[in-house]
Length: 87
Image 1 (cartoon, rainbow, N blue to C red):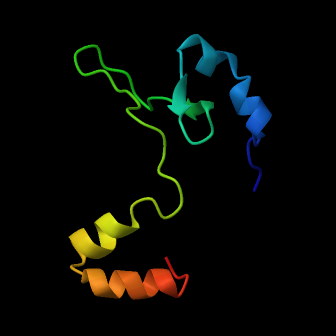
Image 2 (cartoon, helix red, strand yellow):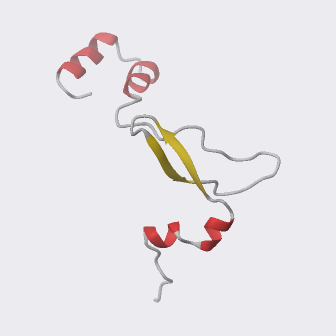
């Protein structure tokens, strides 16, 4: 079985089709104090445009929201996990 070509990251960034359709988008990353290039819309619609609203969360950024908010973990247990270096 023969496969088609496999693009490298550089190939994808330099792809003329992706560049011409404005696929790449710059997103401000305040923690890094610079913009990061993100992949853009996998589709394009005139009446409902797709957009990146914020950069990806940093590691652990949403721990409290998930553990406390979604899973209902008490604040005391979160404190224990933090003291142990788990979160």
